[in-house]
Length: 341
Image (cartoon, rainbow, N blue to C red):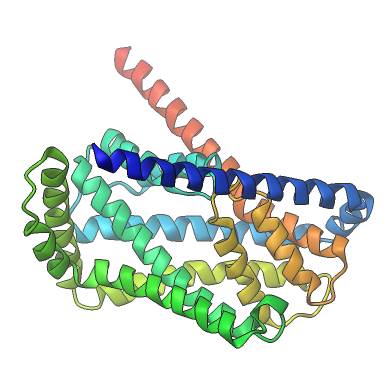
């Protein structure tokens, strides 16, 4: 009975801290809105040529289909029955739920597990293993890119000017990468440790069974020569498309080194992972705008760039995902009526 009494205050303290941070974020956003000349921002947005806007949308669609291909390939390697189109529907559900969750956290992954079970008929262990592997690959790549970003921006952003701060951030990022790499590439060792746990409770039994299945799946991927390397390079390639989009947008306003934009992109995404507001809304825009201003862009120009980039990489994806889900539902409805006839 003592455990709940210890953990409850911790959860309460954590909740208070997150609520305070959320309030501060909202206040800062309100201040920015009040102080901003939106007429100038709209004028900045209108300078984007329609052809460039179309190119940005096309690059985002390539990003979405590449991500779906990664899921598809993982399913094939794990010998899971799969359909590229149905996987696109599953990921669309996940994206819509991600958009409604603070910091794009666990909600979208849970939705993917549920839809993998419902649409593709996977068992829960299969779905959770697949989601964990793909998410880990994505996070490993993001952590690696963020480590490079901290190094690139170290002389430009004030809070990174301290050697102690840079070393601390790099140490944290590398620790995260090490944990993810251990979970993916040294799963048999992790499985051996978990199986030695003496508890036979329902939760412990489920965890042991899941870790055993997860370990088998990572071994299956590892047994295919070069597959892990391909998957990590694919994840890095998918993430690398994001600074390319930012570069194309910024080039309409100013000349900023591509490596700097590379760093700005990934630090903004890392900031958006802090669970304050749904989908990282506000946190992302504030982080990106602040770093662009550090590169001598006007406030209005920096905000315009972050809003255009966010529309392409977030709101457009949400709208695309909703369209995919609606098309799938309508297709199933029409197919069902034809079968009845």
